[in-house]
Image (cartoon, rainbow, N blue to C red; front, side):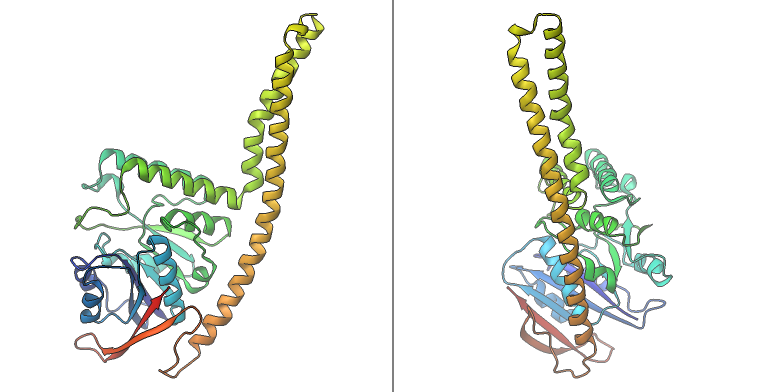
Amino acid sequence: MKLIIQIPCYNEANTLEVALNDLPRRLDGIDEIEYLIINDGSKDATVEVAENWGVHHIVNFNQNKGLARGFMAGLDGCLRNGADIIVNTDADNQYCAEDIQRLIQPILDGDADMVIGARPIDETEHFSFLKKKLQHFGSWAVRQASNTDIPDAPSGFRAMTREAAMHINVINDYTYTLETIVQAGRDKIAVTSVPVHTNPDLRPSRLLEGIWSYVKKSIVIILRAYMMYQPLKCFTYLACIPLLSGLGTGCRFLYLIAKGEGYGHIQSLILGCTLIVVGFLTFMIGLVSDLMAANRRILSDTQYHIRRMEYDSLSEKQSGRDMPETGWEPCVVVENGVPGEEKKRRKVYNMC
């Protein structure tokens, strides 16, 4: 059983070594542990810190692509290097690395394919009162959209199996945390959570540019994911608003006609008809979107089988000279090992 711990990085030279030093070297139920960082266009010495520490794999972006793109590139790198379990954590050492054993245990026990680390939000001192409430509200909204019971949806501390990782697709460029849970819940991937601890804050969050900016982007992500996976239900609800309003306005006009007072209220008839048409068109958009969602499921299943064939083929290669080709460009192969351990080849890839 091979575990790869991936860490998305953007200008993390000051904190990366602290996070790496805390990572476990051995875990129960795991035969091999490797480490991978995603350098998301860092302008500082992030890569040098990772190389000097002895990270096994480095995925390189020439410019900053965002957390979501980095996360997906990391999953790709982990799968190509034969990971059976993938753990994602942060480079600012926010999450307690000792909890990785707890995080992967439901997977080892066969109880889940994806595990989310639930932080003690209300007890986290560096979270403001407003941020705590927004975290709870966002998690509630994700639970409604995904049909899961995850208490801390924005948590980036998570583990997943090889199979679950091959099903994951992140559409937005902002963050992967919310969308992946909605997708997993709607695709019937077994998702659970475990309580984890957090470390003191080493730096302010770069993802949280501002409270209201975060709220706006999160709402868009949740609504977009919900419309992708439940379009007919979503657009039916939306269609009910103008449709019922139009029917109400039309009934009022008919009532006035029956009383002989409707001739001065022709505007109500026009408004009612317009609202009914808008509601009908909205419902039709839902039907078309539902057909597109069915097509998306077929494409997603096809992509999963292509990924499985490609990654399984790569994992069967035994020669150290075999390197991934599709979507990857070999850049540098550096001989360097973790002090006190047998030297292992580090793979560094440039991404477009």
